[in-house]
Structures are given as C-alpha cells and as structure tokens.
Image (cartoon, rainbow, N blue to C red; front, top):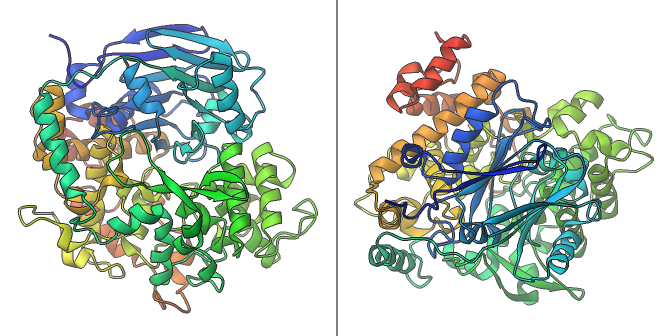
Length: 630
C-alpha cells in the first residue's frame, strides 16, 4: 500500500561525486517526526554530528518538506536544516513562497545535499529528472539576477528557485538562502553552507499531485480553519492589522510598549519613530504579497518605491532603522533590498549596530573601519558596511564572522547583542520577558521565530476546551516572569510540530494558535494515520529534546550557554512603556527546565526524559560521550 500525504521519496545529491539517488523514508520515523523540521533534524543528528565541520563537504544541507506542504492548509513551507558555521550548533531556517510546494509537486518529501562541487553548480529538478549543471556564469550575481537568469536559461518563467548571493559565496556567516525574489530561509548561515558546497542555486519544476487519503475529511478541517481565521470573527485582535499592513504593524506594537530597539538596543524609544511603522507604507501599498495558497490576508505587502516594486518586513524596518538611528524610510528600503540581493540576513544589521556603538565608545577607530565614520543615523555608512560584509572586504571581513567573533577581536563584548553566536533580532527582551527566555534557551541562538507569534498569548483567543500547561492570564502579562517557563516550553514544542507539518507559523492566529484539533484532523485525513493533539505534544517535545541533545553533543551546550547579553540583564530602559525593566532570567530558566524535566544545574535532558520520548539512542550517545551522570 502506498503512502498518502507523504511522497515517500527523499532526494539525495552528492556534489562531490555527482551521484543522485532517491530514498524511501522510514515509515516509523514519519510517524515519530512527521516531516519538515522534525524529520530533517533526525537526518542531521544521524549524519552530521559533533566531528563535522560546518563548512566541510561532510556537512549536510537538508531541505525538508512536510506532509501538508503544497496543500491548501499547508501552503508552501519547508525547513532548511544544517550545522551552522555561525554557532557550530543546529541551524534551522523555515522558508515559504512557492519553491516548497513546487518541490512537493515534483514528487519529493525533501532533499539532502552533501559533498562539494569542484566548481560552481546549480541543480535542476524537473519532476523525476535531476541534473547538476555548471553555474560559473552565475557566480558573483545578486540573487534577483540569478533568479531571472535561470528562468531565461531554462526557458520557463514558472520554474521556482532558491539561490545564494555574494554573501553566501563568500561564506559570510550572516548569509542566507533566498527563494525566488522575496523569500528567505531564516538565519544561522545556511547561505554560507551552500556557498561552501559551491552550490549557487536549486531550480525545480513539478507537475504531480499530492495524494490525500480522505479529501472530504481534509477539506472539512480546512473549511473550519478558514472560519477561525475570518477577519470579521477572529479572536486575535492583531489579526486584522496584520492582514492590512503585513508584519510591519509589529513596529507599531513595539513603539506602543516602549520596546523599539534603538541604537543597538540601548533604549526602547526612538526620537524618529513616528517616521517608521505601517503608516509610512500605507499609501504605497499595491497589493498583499502571500505565499502559495496562504490562509491569511498577507504577512507582508508589495509596495511601490521610486518606480520599484518591493516588500518590507518589520525586522528590516527596525534593524536597519531605529536600531541604527536611521529614520529615513527610503534609505531603509534601499538597504533592505540590498540585503535581499546580497543574500544577507537583514539582522546582519545587528552586527553593524555593534560596530556603530563600538565606534561611539572609542573601541573602534577610523583606522579599524577602513576610514569610515560610524555615526548613528548615517544610512550611507550602513550600506557601505553591508557591502563590505557580504564581500568580506577590509573591516567587513571581521563583521562577516559575526558580532561575537568581531567583538572578541576588537573588544566591546558587553554590547555584542548575541546568544550562542547568533545576533539578536529586534523583538526586545526588556519589553517581552517571554522572548528573553526564548532567546536564551533557543538551540539555534537568539531568534524569535521558534515561538511565533512574538507577543504573549491572548487569553480571549484560547477556547474553553483547551487546557494549556501554564497560567494563560499570567503568561499574557509581558513584563513579569510568571508562567514564562511553561509558556516557552509549550511554544517551542507546538511550533516544532507546526514546522514539521509545514504549516506557516504566521497563520497561528485566533484559536488555532492554541487549539491543535484542526491540525491533527488535517494530518490524519491527509495521511490515513490517526494523529491526536496528544500525539502532537509528544512529537514536539521529542523534536525539541533531540535538538538540545544535538547541541550538547556538538558543543557541550549547557545552562551557561542559555544566557543573554548583559545589557538585557542589567541596563534598564530609561523611558517609554518598558521603563525600568531588565530581564529576570535566572528564575525563568529554573521554571523552563522544570517544565522540561531537564537537569536545572546543567540545562541538559535527563536520561529518563530521553527514554520516555523514545530517544533511548540519544541517551546511549550521552553515556558514550560522558554526558551522564548529570
């Protein structure tokens, strides 16, 4: 009997030998990890362990889809998983757009890329036919030029692509992978791994269908999902604002609570903040920009700007705006587009913000910065540094190694905003204590996406029949530590499941943020295998424990790594809605480890917990490597 939901085929491509093979995933692992993030993590754990150098051919670059990818509810998401050159820990980015659905239509559950090509190449997946082609003529091109060149070369404007820009080619650890023109893989140097493999791009064209076991049951769940997310009735007060403005409205929220990252997050109020936010782009909106089969009005908007059509996210408006003292939205848009073209994480601007503060405080001089004066608000200097970073030119070569290494080289580690080597985002912990805890314990570093949405749960959006393992009313108070341990544990576990189904976490609004009944119904109908909400909670916990265990084995990760920059712990905001706050991390850490049943002194999973979750093989690895007894 064939599989339903899943394709039953994983593509493996060895760039060193040129060998292309197709493997059937283990059906028990599909039940235990579902797909996407969970299944990709299982492959990474097995194939790229502690002794694998992230930029050597032995590292794996895993593009993993979920059983709902390419269906109306799953939309078009995939997880891109590798061992990060930035942290030497796990890297997990989640990408939307159109490439993931197209890869499903081509007949695959994912692909695993290993080895290294002797010269630049790209991969073309045309349904069952997979070829590795010369990309020498594409090396050095921006991501937008690469995408357009490939569509012309392959003669089909409907082909979908992922590619890297100069930042990935030069293995800048702030680099990422870009899907088509607008979509990104997340953070943690996936682009650098792709560049280290001499892989410029992957193109896909698919013409197949996704087999659904019970179409009627699937569409029953889908119809109920749509009703829950109806803007006229959705219980999430942020949902309509999100649909109208995209995630740029988060800038408005951060302004309102006094948590707008300003000048390397020294303050939470920016004197130019009235020039930033959704009101700035309102008159320039052309239309919503959504991924394939999106169930939301939009998560961003296409806007017109000086004859260009582009999109902007809240992260860029804050990281390249207030956090660098820039209030010129035109300049912010220009630098956002530049990052996209370079294949550069927009939060590379956090490394630039460190450089500006280090210059402000006299740690850096013009001699260090290639003659550049780094004055807050100078968008032209920001642009110059981003280019230098992507091409590893001069001072940019230091920034391209990340803010942690740059600050260790020059000094100024106290204002290097990073966790586990990954720069923070602009969802600031002093305004949102739960985010402070999430940054600290996140196994990929300081990234807010693993507990999306970034704001606390809304009690009125939790249905009466849903009993959450924490006090929802206390968790919803953003600036107290109460209930944050349980909240973050639950958020991580449930988002791990969402990322394994490959349903967009942006659509976690209203009741479907907390009630997973429809998720379970949709997966059961798609696959013909009965999954319950209780199953999901175990699967999510299993994935998160495997991720933490991978980090423990790769770098002895422990409680000492689960920390925050000193600024968040000791320097209160001096004005605004989060005046006087610092993050009470230690108490929240204890609560988090208790919720996880992990050892509080080390922050590591206990043998009993691993065994309970069906991860006895990890417990054995711990024992072989001296992790036990704790």
